[in-house]
Amino acid sequence: MASLKIHIDLVDKIHLELVIKAAGHLGWEVSPGTPGAKPPDVLVTTPERLHRHRYLKERIDLHPQILLMASSQDTDPNDLLGVRVMGFLDPEMRPGLINEILLEAGNQHLKYRDGFSMWHQMEERYAESSVLLDLALELGPELSIEEVLGKIVQHLADDLGYAIVSIMFLDEKEGHLTIRAAKGLSQRIIETTRMEIGKGVSGSVAQSGEPLLLKDVEAEERFAKVRSHGRYTTKSLICVPLKVGDRVIGVLNANNKSRSNPLNEFDLRILSVFATHISVSIERIRLYHNLERKAQELEEAYGKLKIVDQVKSDFIINVSHEYRTPVTIILGYLELLKSTLNEPSHMEKVSVAMEAANRLSSLIDDSTDLLRLDTGSSPFHFQEAQLHYFLEESVRGQWPRFGSKGVDLSLDLPDSLPPIWADQAKMIKAFDKLLDNALKFTPKGGYTRIKAQSYGEGGVLVSVEDSGSGVPHEDLTRIFDRFEQGGDIMTEKPEGTGLGLPIAKAIVAGHRGTIRIDKEYVDGCRIIVTLPCLDSWGKGVTESPESRVQSVER
Image 1 (spheres, rainbow, N blue to C red):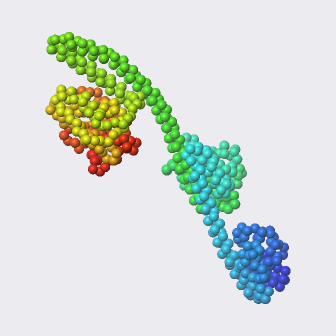
Image 2 (cartoon, rainbow, N blue to C red; image 1 turned 30 degrees about the horizontal axis):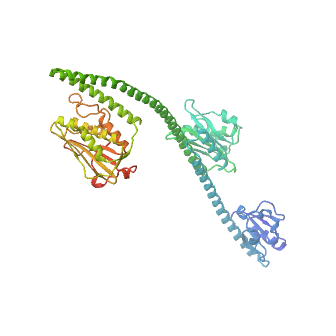
Image 3 (spheres, rainbow, N blue to C red; image 1 turned 135 degrees about the horizontal axis):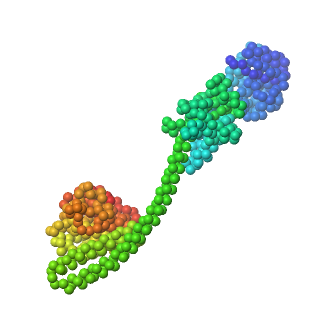
């Protein structure tokens, strides 16, 4: 058993001599007489003399090394001070039994001391883990690198007890390390320290990328300058590399413990964890600030783009307005000229000119309409509406054109459909554009049909299908893009601006609906439009399994 310190405070000289002799046989250090202020390992006294021992006024868990042996069983010292009683000395006790009691008391003390030491180590580990958790919660990406480094060295010094802490960053251009944050070093040292790569402890670790633990600097001749420069005392130290991936960006140094204990492998592990945390935090902050900068640049670019877009919009609207007036005048004069002509060839030429002027007028109207839908300068005027009304209006307006081309146009509606929330004028325009598209691609003798039905949970579905050439598979994903038209534009470009379907799409989207091409329809082209009914406005339309259509969503 290890040697223990025993203090004997007994008035009874017989027992005093017996205890001193027994303790001597055990190899214990004996201090009889006036008690000192520092607690011994074993105390032998009586309950009546407990008040003489000042250290017993503190809680026993602050002095786990104290073992109390009383010479009387009349009073329980636990009731007086809460101290631990490891045995009693009986007045009739034999010397051999005193030896046994002291030996047992010593053994119990050592077990208790070892257990407390383990508990104390666990408490330290818990405190260190708590520091890591607190640090993780504190280090937000919005902090600057200097603020993060300052918090880290503060925690390492104040909470984990490292006497000197420093974080050094690598200047790759200059090839040396400089101190970016420190605790326990003078400002002069922080500002003037330059450590070359490969030199000293920090430089060696930065070069190798491996952590270094020096438990006793005195025994390390290769780092003699660390202990001899005279600016501060180093007994033991740890240096851990800071890495982002495989690249070393700096080092974390910790010198000495404020408790004067040498640094050990656990300190190396905890500092390695901190080093990883520093590296991750620095990289996260760098990415965060890069994203912030990019976001700022994008915001500025977006602001400029909005200005340019507004200028473009104003330009198009103004130019369209300026074009519309002369085009209207040209059409008026062409109509007047045509009415005065009798020669068929002359009338045909005027008709060609009128068709060209009408296409130009349509292009102006479509460009202006789409621009106003994009910019919101053409607001929607919603009201309760019946789908029958604007479908019939659209078909009635398009019937003459279909009839002149020899294409059959039909409308198939159920007896009743739920009302919808709609801008009637815009919805009529949307279906006009869909019928325009069907007419362009349907040859003479073909057909175009409009059908409507209830759809899913709280919606209506309208399909516009034709017997035309259909949409090539490669065009399905861009058919609703602006100025896109089906067919070979060099050999069979149809009439129109390529803005009809984009206008229809914008109007349907403004009604919280969807528009799509049915890719399974093989007899031509079928365009599907879904709209929420009045009761489902704002909730969207949910497809039911039986009404789901295989389609390309746009």
